[in-house]
Length: 84
Image (tube, rainbow, N blue to C red; front, side, top):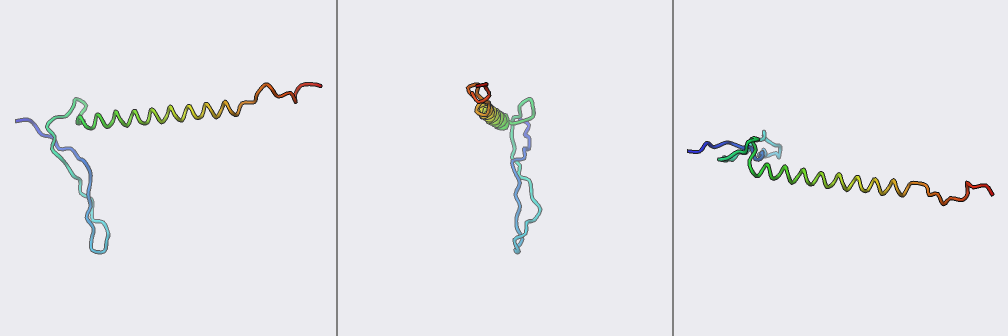
């Protein structure tokens, strides 16, 4: 028999009649296989996707900053500083 592992997948909380939350209760599922790093295959894929997303956002921000800096640089075509 394969060893099963409990993995928390979320939390839930019920409400009282006056709409206040009761203490939250963790929700678990059984998984049969964990990767070497202790995560499920889905967790590994999610981490890779999130990492890629943030890397893309960082590249986009860096490019925007470079474009902004290039637009703010003074040009050498300004003849007002030259003697007449």
